[in-house]
Image (tube, rainbow, N blue to C red; front, side, top):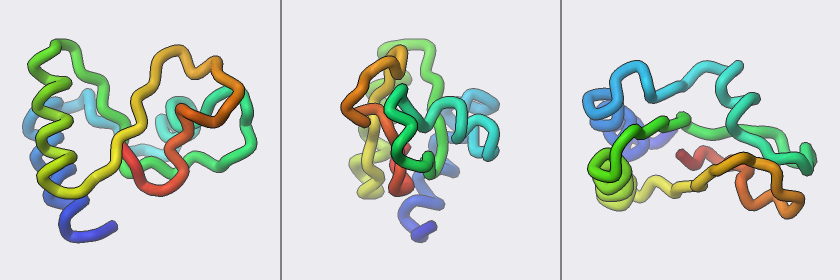
Amino acid sequence: MTAHAHAALEQLTDLLGNRLLTDQESAERYGVDWTKVWAPAPSAIALPETIDEVQQIVEIANDHGLHLVPSGGRTGLSAGAVAANGEL
């Protein structure tokens, strides 16, 4: 993980607390869609509860060059919700 990503995760932890998940079980649960082709490798999973939190997450990620993979139900078949390269 780069220094920029580490700094971003510190800020995101301050913002989200225990709603920023970094454990392997969460990565496997939230990091894939139905394609199951790509191995999940997100830097973290953010679970915002408000629009303000979403805006702050985007700002923090942008400030630190951390890519985002938005995720809904993860039922797609195009691998569009797969975080395979350290994205948030």
